[in-house]
Amino acid sequence: MPDARLPADPGQPTVPTGELLETGRRNALLKAGALQNAILTSANFSIIATDEKGIIQLFNVGAEHMLGYRAEEVINRCSPSDLHDPAEVTARALALSTELDTSIAPGFEALAFKASRGIEDIYELTYINKNGSRFPAIISITALRDDYGDVIGYLLIGTDNSVRKRVELQLNDAVAAAEKANLAKTDFISSMSHELRTPLNAILGFAQLVESGTPAPTPTQKRSIDQILKAGWYLLELINEILDLALIESGKLSLSEEPVSLMEVLLECRAMVEPQAAQRSIGMVFPRLQVPHYVKADRTRLKQVLINLLFNAIKYNQLGGHVTVECTTPTPGKVRISVRDTGAGLAPEQVSQLFQPFNRLGQESGKEEGTGIGLVVTQRLVHLMGGEIGANSQLGVGSEFWIEMNQATAPGLPLLQRAEPPRAEPGHDTAYRTVLYVEDNPANLELVEQIIARRSNLRLLGAADARLGIEFARVYRPAVILMDINLPGINGIEAMKILRADPVTARIPIIALSANAVPRDVHRGLEAGFCNYITKPIKVSQLMDALDAALADAAATHGQDLAEDIP
Image (cartoon, rainbow, N blue to C red; front, side, top):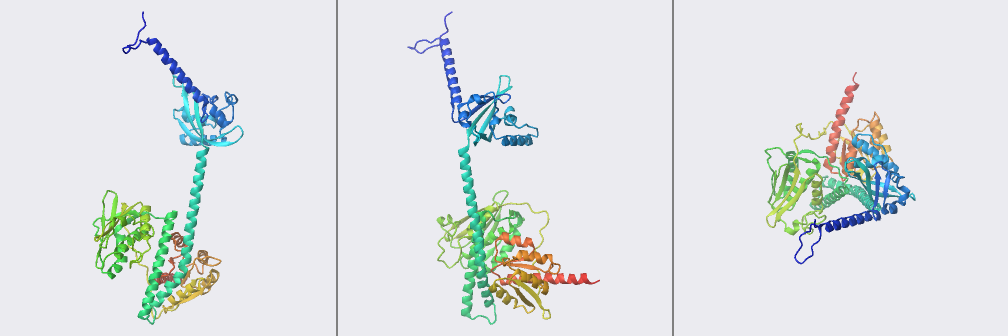
């Protein structure tokens, strides 16, 4: 029977089918041989094949170069786990046992466990060279099966991971160095904040005393005092904002996220900003929320954000203008708070530069003071609370700043009204009450002495260090103790703990009066047991409010002690 022949193009000789098939098989074999040869001679990858028991049957050139063994030294003699760090093999077995809730023996069983179940496994391990040196590798292991699906061996393909590990270590070192530098910067700024606050406390404190003293200052003196106070409070604002920015950038700013009532926060903000708006004849329009809105935020920081936006809207508004606050829900799960003003507005290129540090958008020479940091801090606080911030503006019309926060479910219990701290108004027949101030800075001591001297029912007792302060507290038993934190020898927190441990002084209210104004310092002080924490520079009204509340508590405690002494 003649050979079957394939149709051919005109002018081309006819090729027998058998010859074509033979040529195809020969080419396939050549290709398979080339592939096998490439696998066996690859110097970049270690390729190891084992039988079903995990004994090495194939050890290519790459494995020889990588591990230092000749193929005949390991074939039919070793398992791949013999070439690995034994501690890692044991750890892998334990991890798999925990993950799969079954017992897995260390050794090759641990390496091949997943592969035997049809799962290609890729993992990192440490190879041990014949000369004892170690290096990291990435290994892929696959089960080899026969035509019936039974496992007949395993294929391990590995590559040296030293370069990537070295780059990772360098990157980790660089990150650690950057974090260390960032921490050093934050600590430096915190320390500088303390050092700046101490002299600023004297400047602002005595200026407040002169301003409100008797006899009243002359008009010329009053203008000078106003300039001192204005510059001092501006410097304090700058210190606070730089400190906030440093804490945010270092990741050390702690937030307490909770459902926050927008109605409550806006009422508090309104009470704070309306007096300033009234001075400039600026009308304030706040929303009347028919439905209570709660957002997920840190209450204190949300209030800081809104007050900053409101103060800016007042500061850069026109005389007799107005500020409008609105609350909307643009998308499900979001609440938008918008603050619109009727100021001069901003050009598009100015809007694009709004959140750059120290960029006041050409207002440096204007009559309004500012640090150029407030909006940057505001933006980062909003982002830390999971929100968004933006702005729209039009020259000659005004600007709108908005924040969007995640909506929260109202808390289960109704919010209690926050009561104002009780104030103890001194009467004409009130006996002297002693206030002990533990402070090593003479200027600070004199400042508080002059503040206390304005109350006819109070007298101040000063102590220059904690040891003397503790002795004075035990002997004189003051109604209230004011305690600096950074004292020579025993610091203020340690002194407070000693006083709390002594039955004689345990119930005396102690107020921290410190230039350590970082939020974590304030939180640490309150947690340690201070009944209040006043930061320097001192605001006279704030200090007197805290003293009045502490004196009221001390009077109540004294009355309770007398009742307990009656048989």
